[in-house]
Image: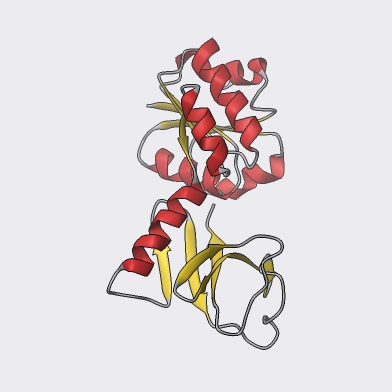
Amino acid sequence: MYIIIAGCRKVGSNLAVVLSQSNHDVVVIDSDPDNLELLGSGFNGLTITGMPIDEDVLRSAGIEKADALAAVSNDDNMNVMISQVAKNLFHVPRVITRVYDPEREIVFNKIGLTTICPTTLAVEKIKEFLLSADSHEKHLFHGTGIDFVYVRPGKKMIGRPAKAVENRFVFGLIRNGRFILASPDLQIEVNDIVILADYAE
């Protein structure tokens, strides 16, 4: 397949390497040339520095012959615009859009976009984990690009906002047996279990 990947952060770069190593023709577009360095020596496709929403950039990437496009930048709005151009203007047969906001995912699905939401996937996997008889201190959810670590809060964590702990992203808390998604005003309490998320994107 001829596949275009718009966005080359951790998800885009890893996806590009995996697809190229599976003998697909892969072109990666990113506006920041430094991001393209994430591809490393394992990538044997093409790279283009430019805005993935730009029609000329997409044409130079060969979008008119593309079998598929994945919009996986870190900006939901950018991903949606790229996907709409690929689908409606260039008629790419397979287009997938990554969105972080679950509420936006519902809206974008209604306008005909195929989306994947890491937040929704992670919540579902955490729910499965919490409700399963088997538990682990560390859990890697394949396909989500997220490695979750469950920790009891130390003295330095208690009373602090859940948005940043130990220089790691706090995905949520388990409090009194219930999962709570982290928010800026959520504070960590002594009996919480803190869910730290390491993104492999």
